[in-house]
Image 1 (cartoon, rainbow, N blue to C red):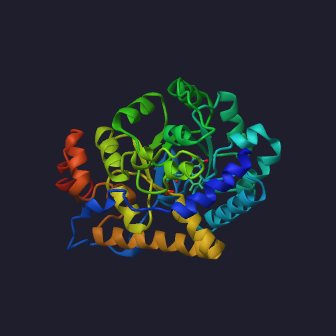
Image 2: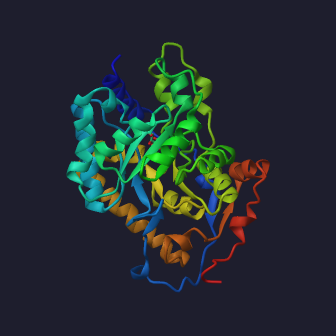
Image 3: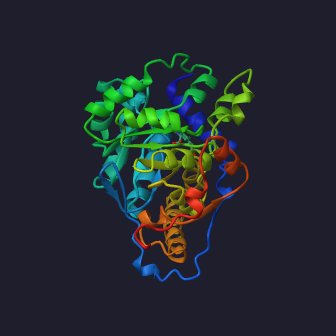
Length: 355
Ligand code: FNR
């Protein structure tokens, strides 16, 4: 099977396996604020990642490119919607374009239609410094995402089986690529121990890419003769992963993704410590079902709904939303207790700015 055929299968299987809301975000509840003393018109949703300021705390996470015309069309639509709504957009792994120049256009279209927007380049942790620089130049990217996808590779019939040296390569790229580096998981979550290594390696942010949304074990199992189903349940759910990374490294930038389905998920993720939330599967489905118009409408709704929730929570900025009180219950609470995280960090804190 060619790389391009694999890319198309990923899209088909991502849509057919869908997202199952096992993120743990249902275990997170806001402490209602009766006197928010704020108007929606005062809300400012700017956020900062790696020294770059984004107008919105929502971004389109990495999906595609490298699969010929169909992936060109998807990236073009995603970029049009990103431009229209002023939200950052990531491309899928650019390795296909580094190996086959014909595929470059399926990625370059993102920069072409959105010349002034924030664009993330994307490669796996097998990339060399030279490849990382080429991927960034291809898109004049503002940031580089490096994905960690060990479970996907191991389940993928033609996937990697050797995962040595990734951290050293990431550190070398972070030092020399010239743009901030985000290291992301693809739906299996990130532990605080992994995040610690990445922050020490010099990355600007980690995107915990938690369990509960698009499931690349299920997707790759559909492409195997003998399925490895035990990996279908593998991973740290998004809420637990976010909370353990943020409480361990409150001064570092953490991003949320993995099963984010609506504005409530976005708002809860930010309250757990994220500076922004990435959506992949949801936007892919929105585009498939409603075309560019439907996607743009969903993106606008998401942004507006986040503002509504910020208003009732009395959080004027993303920074203030990151300090609102939430109570964590259920399996997420259990996970965090077992991992040595004191969840009262979230439930009794007072907003530093508001006192
Ligand atoms: C992805 N994802 C992904 N991630 C990455 O870093 N490079 C890639 O090339 C891809 N490719 C890809 C294809 C398709 C069709 C989907 C749906 C997703 C993973 C994505 O960025 C994200 O981490 C996971 O999908 C989890 O988020 P959602 O989908 O639950 O919001």
